[in-house]
Length: 303
Ligand SMILES: Nc1nc2c(ncn2[C@@H]2O[C@H](COP(=O)(O)OP(=O)(O)OP(=O)(O)O)[C@@H](O)[C@H]2O)c(=O)[nH]1
View 1 (cartoon, helix red, strand yellow):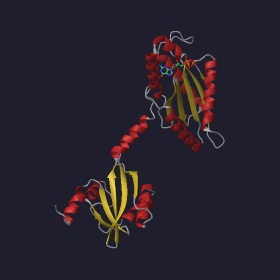
View 2 (spheres, helix red, strand yellow):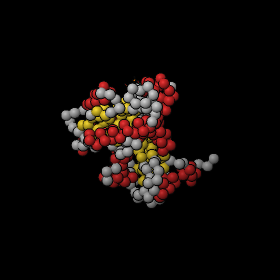
View 3 (cartoon, helix red, strand yellow):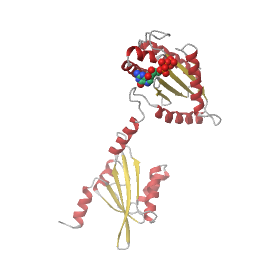
View 4 (cartoon, helix red, strand yellow):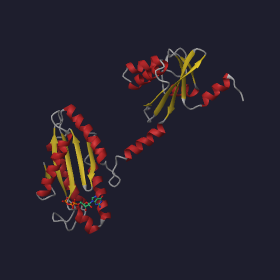
């Protein structure tokens, strides 16, 4: 087996991780082929022209331009150089205009005589990150209706609440509960009940189009709609259209005392979030309105 310098460089060049070696001042001493190729293909500051470049300066420049990952990289490398940690690693996004990409950066020290060096490797971890994203997205989707589940709703609602609080904009929330759904299940079977919930999911999606909107399955046959930056008057119009669209689905519910097809009741509420109120107040208010809608004859919106 060869053990020449050339042989070892060939080994390093065959590795798909992007590798750069720096000295204690951050000056670059070596890069492997994957590093150069990535740098050249992605218009990075340091590609083939790495000699006389300082890695830490590049991190600091990125940091000064507001790149939080530049800051993290620079800080992490220095903790290893200053021997405060034995190694450092962190994961960061590096998306190209056409694809999502993530990398893991690792810093490990080594010593030759009394000279210290640091290997910085960047490993592409995109496959794992995309799989994690898929799992996380699946955990937020209701398996039957293919819309967000309660957990995703809670997360979204709190974010939207904070956004509307900052913007001093109203946020509206509608609780949508199907009327006499038990009768539909009893008369046509659970399978038909499920199909009906799927159709509801599809319909509700049409009512949540903007980034500040969300529809979700809140419980069995109860759904919720949030509309950020939307007044009560605007939300009421949406609710009335939704009630009409539910009737237009023409899902038979022959024994319902309301109509011979599926209907729903909606409790609607609006709040302009500020320091003096809480997100759960909006849900409580909408819930109260939903009871009122059920009590006053169903197939209506109360606010
Ligand atoms: N098919 C099906 N039915 C469900 C599902 N989740 C809840 N349900 C049914 O929804 C029905 C809800 O019944 P109730 O709470 O009495 O309400 P309701 O019959 O709609 O009457 P009101 O809400 O008072 O108008 C029950 O029969 C549940 O079994 C589901 O995932 N699939």
